Image (cartoon, rainbow, N blue to C red; front, side, top):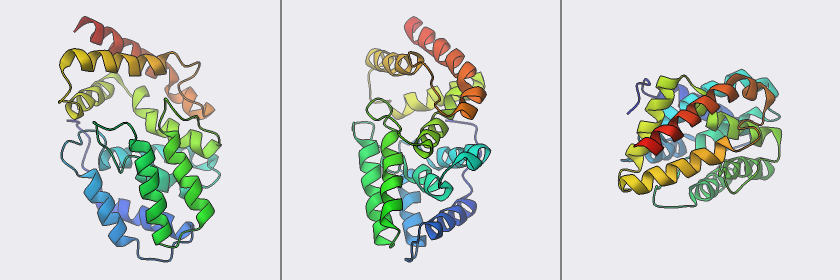
Length: 217
């Protein structure tokens, strides 16, 4: 659904294992990475897949120096959409639970595990508010797609529609307008100043255009 290149599994695996080492994991993270890949490769994932994870990790590099605990931010980005069911309303919570159990099974530091789970929960944009710089970075990086060039953003919207193909057109348009309007009505879409400077203006343009297109459909 997008023109993005396929995810580089070798590079992603190396980053995953390095991040696990940084949080004190002593178990073999390879099998867990394979499970992660399986989740992100499920049928019906047109946007919330490993290409999205890789894009988030690439975006992170620009603000890595602003992270308090960069390895934990990486792990949160890896796992933030590991559970994704368009029929459910608690994907972020279930992804946080998955990450908590997975990191605990590998012997990761318990405080680090709790922080990773909190970052994942913060990506539930309408129900959770990011409390720390690392949480704000995870949320903003996840939303960086909103501030991409119009053609990239249009591909994103098409991919979201494909993920919700089971929803009737009128219901989808109404629900999507509500989601996009929620972001547009925020005083600032991006909470981290550097990401706000980079993406805020374009994101507002993209959202406004998408809302107008939905209203005319």
